[in-house]
Length: 174
Image (cartoon, rainbow, N blue to C red):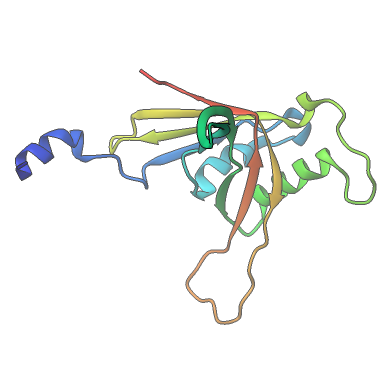
């Protein structure tokens, strides 16, 4: 049977805290992010480490399903952002989506280099040192979510979600 001291010795540096993170979005040049682009890293309220799934391929052999690995798929990724009174960060995402496809027509970016970029998700320790990094490659927003309005909501700063798609992520595996 394990002791508490054995458990504590295995949980190095007190464990990772999910409120110690930063999200860095390298906004595409076509968006003209300016200072609001840097501000987005401070307005990111919550997110997640990205997920991936390896599907399986069942093959029947003598009446029994034998499974082989299929393709690796990368799941859409979402971040919730705080909204300041000038809507600076939200405007960036609205411009980004407008660049992908205009709301008043079917015109939009033809070159993926215009609207795809990399997003960095850093897990930090309690001294702000990076302990784990994920880089989402070729990311772009697929949804800029609603801001809920409610007369009964007090003592709260409005937030909105942004969902991204991307081709894959990389991380340090050592």
